Length: 182
Image 1: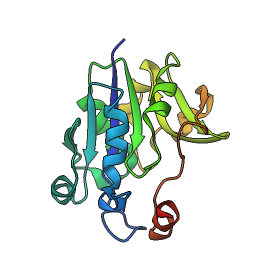
Image 2 (image 1 turned 90 degrees about the vertical axis):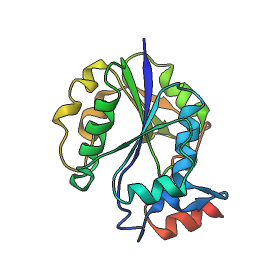
Image 3 (image 1 turned 60 degrees about the vertical axis):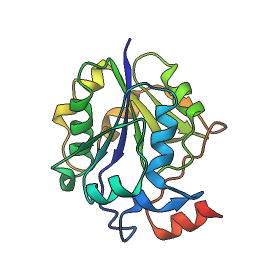
Image 4 (image 1 turned 90 degrees about the horizontal axis):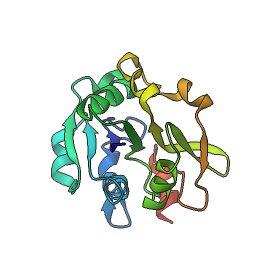
């Protein structure tokens, strides 16, 4: 079975007030944390950029990932997922991570991938990322619209507890960043 990784990093950071992909956490741009965690486990990783794609490329080391720019990024998360899944055509399963989760660890990635088919990480019971899209969900990726991604489809997907393996928090605002930086 061929597994591949997808890191979503296309948003404009409206609530953050700028390109949050480049906000520093531990001295590194936010997007680098997710890319590094996924690339440590998987040989093929795509990072989807959109808003400020050139700025993010210049400001972050995306070594270990193939960069894909989603022209329809402003449509929302659905467009980014469609774009990334299309770039990974041929993969049997795609692990989806978000660029604004600096506490994602390779251990959490491995744990979710260890489950066959589709799976999702939960942190002390709270749903989060990464999410593994098995064949049944990958087939539905082309139908995604708006800013919800696979959220509605994941309710019946097996959960993998990752609370001891990483940090679920993502960065949406500057206040979120300050909390994580402490």
